[in-house]
Length: 629
Image (cartoon, rainbow, N blue to C red; front, top):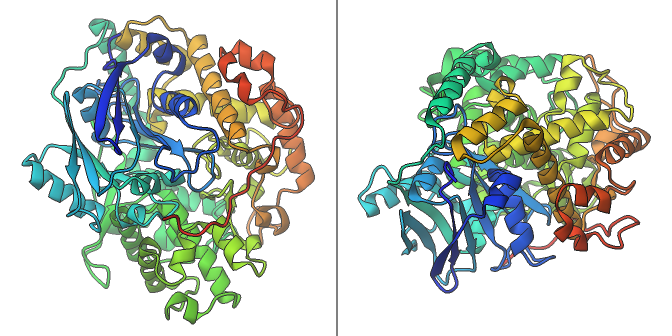
């Protein structure tokens, strides 16, 4: 196989030993890379029911098929998978930048890390050399300090890193992994899994070539894709970036505000993409070999947050802006920077702070709990300080660091009604009460509340369907998006470039790079296979139909204003949506893949986890456990 490095690296932090195995060709064809590799590896290697912080819980770093070669939006994509400390089920996150390409050049497609180091370490990979390096001097440092210190220690400014900050060290359940300073493998708490292993960072240096099977055909197709990547399909991302969604979604009454008490933010103009680009964006840059350049980097040059800088994207603007009621662009930029430094998933962090704000305003927590902070909606100073308290688990931050599901269980007093999560993972920034196809996508999302597993907001916002009604046909729309995104996250292609590809072109690129035969139908089938294996994994870990749900507020509190005023999702509507989805998937009415479907997808070896589940699988709720030691 060309393209792939052809090796899997296994590292045991307990023994300090490492070994390699060849990447099976059939695995490459059936699961492609990235998401497919990660989900298969944790399903195969994990002990069913293992705790996320168990030393033997593997954390798997996997590269996209096209990592290291000049495919637009794909040249440095990587993913990480493991047991999520938020959902007790599938954890997965994806990032880009330059780290992934360096790992492919070092000669690996997958790195599996198990065990727990006695003292803090970082993993240093330089081609065939694999070393565990002392990280005691790095423990307690933020991500940017960690990157600078490791580069200095190694005497190599070109080494690429993925690391955790203080949030990961302190086992904040929504801690993330940061690479290239501004890039995050953000969701489902993979940074906390690293922290539980005393695993501070991976530093990678690679010098090997990445070969391509058919150079001439690859170049021809790649040049065409670069041409498209610079065309109208990506204009939005090159122009304002995703922050351009602020005013669009606000106008559609789909921008969750003050912990989802409404869906229209009166301060939207003050934090819009238009304002960010006019006043704060100082640089627009791209990832390795990218032809689109979507990364809008903003700097604050005056005021209390002078010197702050971060990427500006819609989701963090929602989470740390409208969701917390903060309408200051400079404060949002600083808040995102703090998340990067501490290693907090900015999306979950904002929703967690907003949850705390609502509890404070309703009198369920007081200044005694917050350490003197006036934790009201819109208080930007309180927000930045609370992010620090969460990362270091101080005062109420120790409880909020557990995420809203566990925090609500600990606090009680009816706070569950204000906890915006699905499967223990906090909601991203599309108000599903008035986007009912999207609501289904969120409910069934394999990694909890998330729009990046399905893209089901598209049919609603584009007017393909009536966004305020439901029917069983929405299931197929969600499935089409899920399976496409499973392919995209396995190859791994940039979702901002999704409009320039079709399945046949993905298959052609796969064949030209790897030399393995591939068709558009076969690659679509791989997406369905990956989606189904993810479902099998979650069922094995105790999830079922009752977990394919929406936050209480989305089903009881209608949107208060705007074009979606009065809209919510009832249980009856959700049941119609779920029934249609399961039927279209070829699953039982309780959401269990049938043996016929499993056999069709070549997943028969995993049917052992589904046998006897003719009724609803046992549901495991997010438990209110204290901080893991």
